[in-house]
Image 1 (cartoon, rainbow, N blue to C red):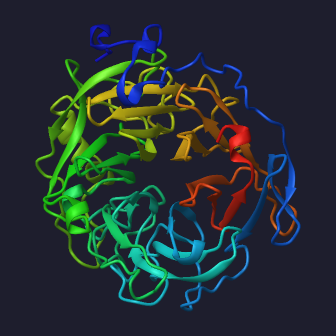
Image 2 (cartoon, rainbow, N blue to C red):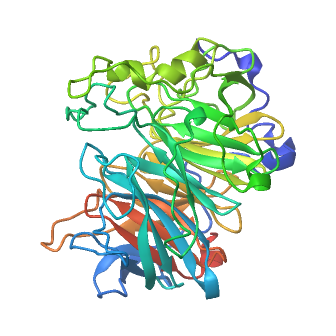
Amino acid sequence: MSLDRRTLLRTSAAGAAAVGPFAGLVTMPAGAAPPRQQELVPVRDLRDGNVRLHLPQGFKYRSFHDTEGPVVLTDGTALPGRHDGMGAFRGPRGTSILVRNHEVNNPQPAFGPGDPYDEMAGGGTTTIQVNRRGGVLGSFTSLNGTMMNCSGGQMPWGSWITCEETINGPDVEADFTGTSNVPLTKPHGYVFEVPVSHQPGSGQSNREPIRSAGRFAHEAVSFDPDRGHLYLTEDDFGFASGFYRYKPPAHPMKVGELRDGGRLQMLKVKGVDNAHLEADQEQGATYDVEWVDIAEPDVEYEYTPGDPAPTKQSKALTHVASQGWAQGAAYFSRLEGQVYDRGVVYFTSTQGGGAAMPGTEGPSGYGNGSGQVWAYDTKRKQLRCVFQSPGPMVLDLPDNVTTSKRGTLVVCEDSSGDNYLRGLTRRGKIWDIALNRLRSSSGAERFGDEFAGSTFSHDGRTLFVNIQSSKGMTFAIWGPWGRIGV
């Protein structure tokens, strides 16, 4: 159903009157010239002198954990690639502790030491202690035996929540790669908690999924400390995606962990059934929303061990979302990164902003646009489109996102062409922060490798970000952030 304009609260024409966390979130005309744009220039990597990034004048960086060659962590782990979502936490003596996802798909032996969740799943997280300039002080496996750990979220009680962007398992047929799921021993599609510590023994996940938070193609999470709610994005690629809220049975700030057994809900626009929020939005469009309950957030299907499972991927992928759709939940396009900042949850819609999709399915990717950035006011229960890209030259397929100390959004692009880190103000002004100019050791261009896992050190001085590729790496970037509006 198309959006009923009567459900719009205000557009940017009257947005200057906004109050609360949305004050200052008035979206400027798409492509408006940002005053802080500075030319990006080639900068040499302090690791070896090669140019891997273009940055504004005065910025420096060092890369580490480059898996174009073998990397062995302190605990003996042979580091996998696919560096993806990541969180940075305060470490001892001015250091940072990074917890980093590895988005490894398809059945294969688990990496690293310890007792994996599924011995035939090759994804998980690694934990790294680094100094302000990207010097690695220690590193170890903190979760293994999971699959397609895409993004996640930093929790203020000292944990990283990592998300599986899949519903693979021995009970579901092969996924889009065509690789059999028969070797898997556990169902996947969950979120897991990883405690933060620079000590390997203290920084280990218990490897128990939070099943009540749903089995679906999870992407990222954020946490509202005032209400104790966890927000979750879904990147279902070929189907409409949902925005979810998990209400745990106990406030995590009081009990020091995220507990299973809570209630999962899905966002619905008030007064509109199945609102097509993946479609073209008026600048600054704002909606009153409500939440519908998901009665069965977790499911396991019948199967015979050793035989291909009869349950179709499409059924398993939409099991959770279809329960929300039946109650009028909204349609989004490929929801990916998100971050909580001062009462607002910001999240990206990777292919949002084009013509409305027919129904809930889009085999080549649900959504026809170049991307949207949304903001949800957790107190007022209002959703606003902060930015909608007019085309790939302005913002091309936004993915992971974080905020600086000043509240500026730093958005990672997942383009097949040039990939940028973009800055985005809460008033909708956008500009370039970094450009990938990575080459392989053979000299081949790797400009299409996406940025992922953007996250600032606790003092805001260093931006850590990954290259998400089979030959992944991590960067530490520092410089005069205030001068460029970050």
